[in-house]
Amino acid sequence: MQPFSTFGWRRARHGRDTLMLPLPQNGARRVCENWHDRFAETPDVLKSAQNPRTRVRVLDFEVGGDEFITMAGPCSVETEFQLMATANHVRRAGARILRGGAFKPRSSPYAFQGLGLEGLKMLAHAREESGLAIVTEVMSENDVSLVAEYADILQIGSRNMENYSLLEAAAHSGRPVLLKRGMVATVADLLRSAQCVLDHGNSQVILCERGIRTFETAMRNTFDAAAIALLKQISHLPVIADPSHAAGHREFVPALARIAVAAGADGLLVEVHPNPEKAWSDGEQTLDFAAFDGMMADLEPYLALRGLMQQEAARNWREPVESCSMEAVG
Ligand code: PEP
Ligand code: MN
Picture 1: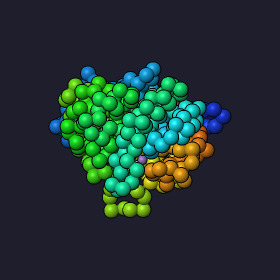
Picture 2: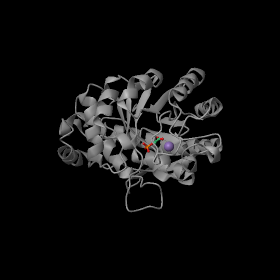
Picture 3: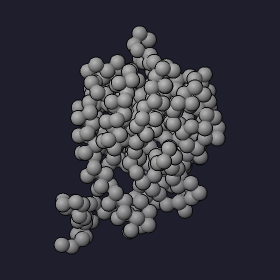
Picture 4: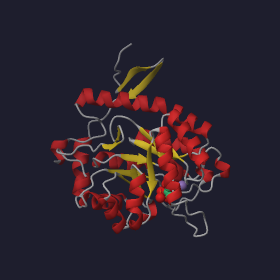
């Protein structure tokens, strides 16, 4: 069999199946220069010759490195049993980070607001038992030092993306910051908030696309996969996707996760619960254990294909297709 066809496709072997790979197009250099001009007001978050890629170190692994990182767990920390069962399950299925809110920003002031310190203690216990790292939201600058004592990554939620005093306090904590895109924030707004964290001396920032509000109301939000591709092209920071808050309905979470992989995301943030029907928050968008296992298994061929394409691009042009020429943007 010819490895390359005359139509710009090639055949590659992955496991027992034959995959058809489109050959990457070499147009990134010119495009990249334009995008850099467009986002020139946030220079430190843009790729440069000196800084092509930030790898955020967490425990003994990296977000933004070669491994696709899954962060999974309940929307809210509820009970010791719920958290431990979830931690053990998602670890076995390949997750590296346990998510769970102890301080919950809720759309309704009457909804469950989180267990606070008690929840943080449960998260710390789950880390001890499972070896997973912990990501949890911090909502107020007054809580940053407390949350930073228990968490490996501080999550800044959508509703707080432009809370600059919180961003500053989170930056000073020294912990990596997972910055979620605001519901009505543009990519430029997201990059401005990331720049703010970097300006305060913390370069360990992970960007998160979690869906935005548009005129389309069929799903909870509109998943902006283009933003992932764009952020991966222009920024050195890791980019992850949250298909749970984007979809708002659990049946669409695996499809959005596959789209995130194809768009180049470095990882996922997914809501998982032993019994989503009984979850204290966001149950409709939360996967049960079987659905999480199914999603993880389904992602494997997509990740393998992406890896093959990146290797191919590196062989042909000595750079991954997603990244741009550093001479052009430096
Ligand atoms: C969450 O991760 O549970 C959450 C509240 O997310 P967002 O800020 O994206 O709404
Ligand atoms: Mn949630």
